[in-house]
Image (cartoon, rainbow, N blue to C red; front, side, top):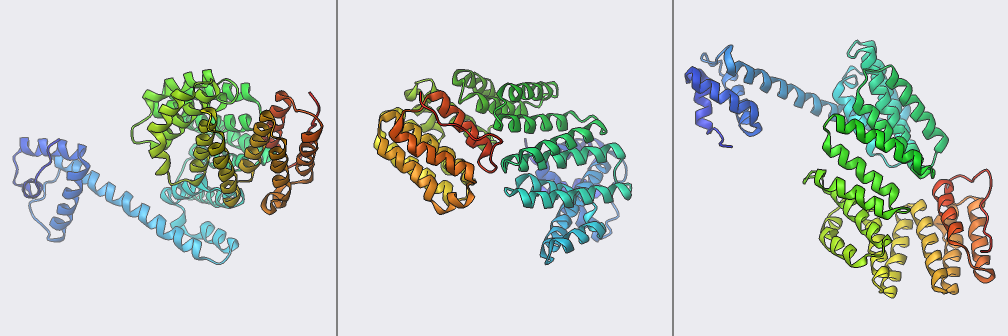
Length: 442
């Protein structure tokens, strides 16, 4: 695409062009962000000087309207950021909540979008709950000021509750997560019928079901989610959904997980490096699970630079775990063990308690398979004695590690039982189960 030179733009916008040249310029400016930005600067200059030749009506007027609207959107977005900074400066949550409830500057679409973005990125579920309460106050105020229709208001509330459900899911607050999902579904039924919101709810529902061990239900929700995105031709979201399908299948059916990744690969946008990284490392895990480590190594070598540049700490740690698994599968047992230990150290350092417990259970299983009973016992002792893990573990979980320690000397543990224990830790790492798990002989 050729750009319009600045002086040529000055002449055209100043009313010195003929109809054909103005038509061609307008068509280009509407399509080209760069030239339209320059046109915006020139338009400001002309207006400040009360330039008499500014065209009114015709194709250039459309350009002027777009420039003005984009400027307004930009200013509103910046103003929302400033208002959010002011809210955050207030000394208490109560005062922050009161300002959001009362200040008109908070009752805008841009401020709500900012809050929703903060909510979806927030790692701590209690802070996510507070952000959600602010977002709901904004939606209520916007509705009262008639800045949104009743149906659109329900859509926005559904989006908030879907994000809350995801935060509660990550925190293993299962009952609360399902309550939030029910709230989101109820609001969607009263909303505009936006299929993207329905698909988003299905995606978080699937993640919740998968975490709880309901694999077939999770896959069913993802299938419905994928069908919606396909009907909307949202191919990047189809790709993301297929990667989630692969994530569900990888531990149990890695061959089917690999097929899902094959379908996702051509649909992943080149600029979405995080999704591509996730897909590649899932492919490595699937290939390891299928006993094809040489192929896994080729994928790993291709994608490892992306891992090093990832700004998110948890994906980098999980990538190190996959690296250790790959080394292990290639026969490099001691280097793999050093990496596994480093992964657990980083899990604990960054407060990733669930990951640390699951990684320790993986190491326990690995050492038991290898017949290295002393190292298996050391894993149990670490789970019981590490201050961070001990502080986070409930009595039922501590009893499990004690039983696993006793089992080292008494009897081997079946693969089925270990799989069940992994699922127990995945679901109940934060709160005990109604019935404690059993550690029995094979």
